[in-house]
Length: 173
Image 1 (cartoon, one colour):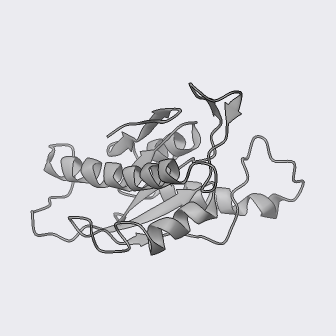
Image 2 (tube, one colour):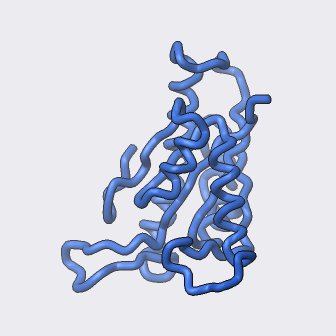
Image 3 (spheres, helix red, strand yellow):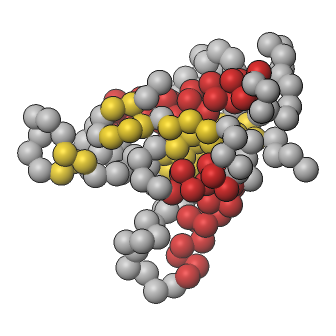
């Protein structure tokens, strides 16, 4: 059966060099709160836009009309506080987005980077693989820097996807 949810993957901790800042920047809700909030909301907006475009295109196997409710948006992030922000304090949580978007996601588990994790216990990596499975079974995926979200988008069929962050502070919209 066809999935009934969208997915937004947010890699907020991705390190980068920024003009005006010395060394490598690893943004988080403490060091760059407005950037992280903008990044998170942009990721959700990107998947909603991609889904609407997909519904109207000839490759979309579902039809949507203007009055249809949007599917839920599953949010995965490398920082649980990003999921918490989207669920509790964002424009989506305050019902200020048009159309109305409903967010869900796991906000209590760290997602270690699979390649760089120092853990020896496979169970410590379960959250990352659950996220990948959920991304791969969604109708549409937005993804950011790195290859994890893109892999999830390709596993979903690659028909409905959107890149929401190219590099550094550059958000795509």
